[in-house]
Length: 481
Image 1: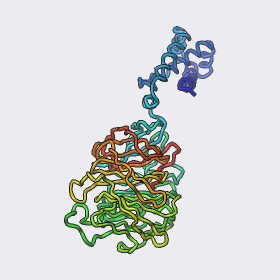
Image 2: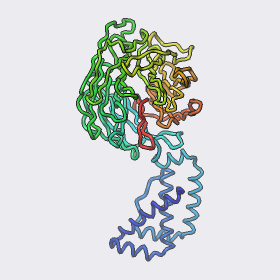
Image 3: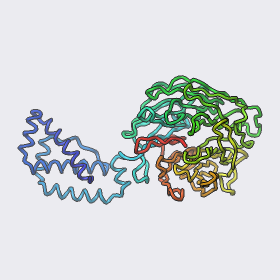
Image 4: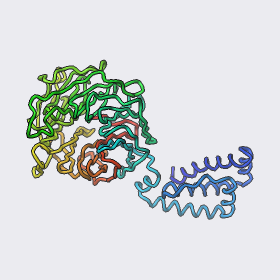
């Protein structure tokens, strides 16, 4: 259906309401409409459709719905032919626009919704819409005030609707999200995360029985039950980490335990993996999804011990199609990615490979501060992406089809400064980066054959962006991988 036909159909309804509200009420209004004659009514419809279409797509102020008498006078005085000529001219103007210009001028009503978590003293999360052509992003809806530094956002549709889980200072909040009209609303009250500096919160799987949270400053992880409406209950369990060998030369990063994230394995859902930057360890706890309980000692042999000063931060997983269950661990401080194999029977991790995420000519500003931040697997399983704050870049790595090991493919600018987080769309056709220092998000199209990224479209964010959460066209949130 053409833009013109849609506008005309919409205005017929407006015109009918105008006549129904004419002096004398519904019957009198319809009688007035009948008395105008068919040509005048058609003219009035086209005149109104033209006006509203013009305002929708060229961003003019919308007038009030006209009265029946005003429409009659206008259409009779100007004539149907003059109105038709005006419509033809308007249609040419609109159709001369490219798809993105029409989408922007039309109010950004279609396309995936992106929720942006923020920090730097902000208390709100923001919504942006991605254009169907994947060439632009625009702010939509109203920001939602959640709590101090709502810096991480994840999502679930286990209730049949979108529910966001937002980590902020010392707590996690549930937020109901409508991807179609871009509305956000708090769902129940905030629940304590049993620690400070809450850096991460994510569902335990598609069923989303619980949300697991990591407290960077508090040195702990906890499990929060998800109630039937998607809101959160009080924590059912927590684990506290303690460092045995603090490193004086890295006192700002490794003087204490710093759990940076927590993920449940996507295969059996029985192991919770916790990258702890302060301990140089990815801890593996046995996870009971029915009870919301973590089991295992912080010094268990199944944990993976990274190189000293590596600083594991985030992880992603190999796709279900791969026989071997691989974990890709990003180490923030030395700027590397490690390929680990998970043993399903005992939860142990075996290191298979370590690769640098930065070009050889990029050197850290000081020891142990390479600043790599996020890692994600492409839905195809062919590429892994990682962000680097040291040189403001996104690294693209190829995944060996046989072994799952990584090789550097490209290192490209992130479109801004300090790419703290990014997310790949569920369809794999675009990627959105949260550039913390430049206060913007960068939208890249992905070439699914080569893995390469397009030139980015940059959109400003009112506060420092820290996290991206994508809700796609089919109302399915990205399941973290």
